[in-house]
Image (cartoon, rainbow, N blue to C red; front, side, top):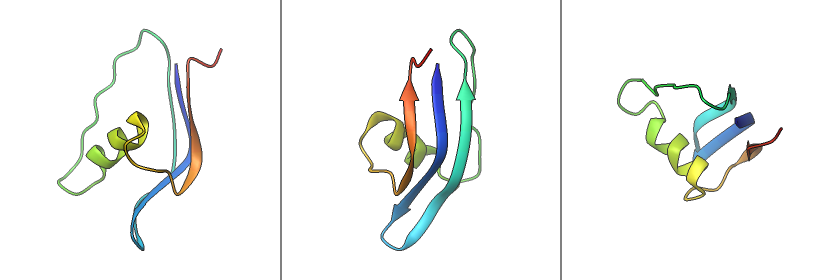
Length: 63
């Protein structure tokens, strides 16, 4: 399971993801879809720890 709570990510002063909440249950399949520049890659970088969160928390396998 992945739990994303109130996550915000920034590049400098520009906030690219604001207050995201998302829960993905174990065994489910999801797609990440959006326009160019909508924050898809930034979210993946945040999930992988390659980009620091401005706020919020991400938890994996919290049962």
